Image (cartoon, rainbow, N blue to C red; front, top):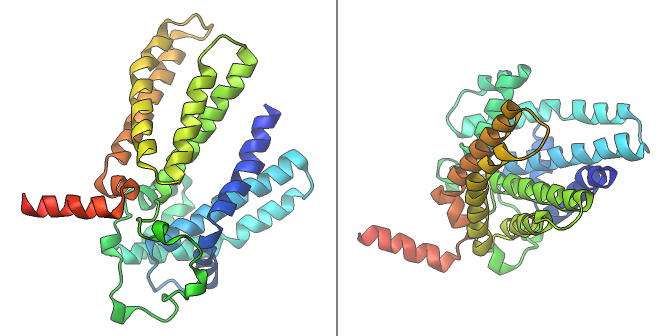
Amino acid sequence: MKIFEIFLFLILPALLIFLFKNKFYWYIKAIKNYTNFNGKASYDEFWHYNFFLLFSLLFLLGLCGLIRIIPLQILGAYYLFHVIPSFSVTTRRLHALNKSGWWTLLYLYPPLGSILFFWLLFFANSRSEETPREESMSEEDLLPERYVAVPAKKLSKRPISLGVALVSIFLFITGALEIFDFFLSGPPNLHIVWGCLLIVSGIGLLLQKFWAYRLTQVLLIIAMILSPVYLFSSDKYLFITKLTSVVIIIILCGIILWYLSRKNIKEQFLEPALIEKLEKRRSTS
């Protein structure tokens, strides 16, 4: 389990930060605007600020708790440093959605703050609400070309949302747990096959591959169908514990399936030419 903790808190955060390094300017922009509570924040700014904050915190937590090369006080100071920028970018994000910035005060009560945070991440990401008109864009919003360091083919696709990235990470971690369980239980079992499928699906989602989108849906449906079999297993756990686990799995898989079925999420995995063809078909029908 020590190997898994190193992977979860050190290797995975460092890898994801490296993969998204071209979007680091959004994080810097949010930090620079920490005193601005009156403007508006785009979905990309809110997305990438929280992305880099989350995984940098995980990485520092791994350095503090696993390797212990830095004191815990540094982690606390790093967290406190981001309190005001977090309130600021959330307030400006609410303004962009025509909501009152006072809703940010829900962060002071973590249960309600978590609901607000996940609503902004998963449900309040309609780009049509926030796309500024060209004449109203400030010079700061017009990013220079030197920041663009991805292939032209990728630029033609819609940016991957934070929700898809979190689903990908969930699949990756679940797959890694299945593989570790294979080595702990010993062959013969199907844990390693299932784990490899989950990891491949998670990586494919990050790469915006349509086959990974379909594979993820198939794997989630299989998990929902086969999860009740766990109720009849020979484990020593109580029946109510098994039932609770099955219900959680079914609900979680159902939520992810519903999220992936949304139109703006599906179009992140389609080629632009296919999206244009589908829109023409909808307009003619």
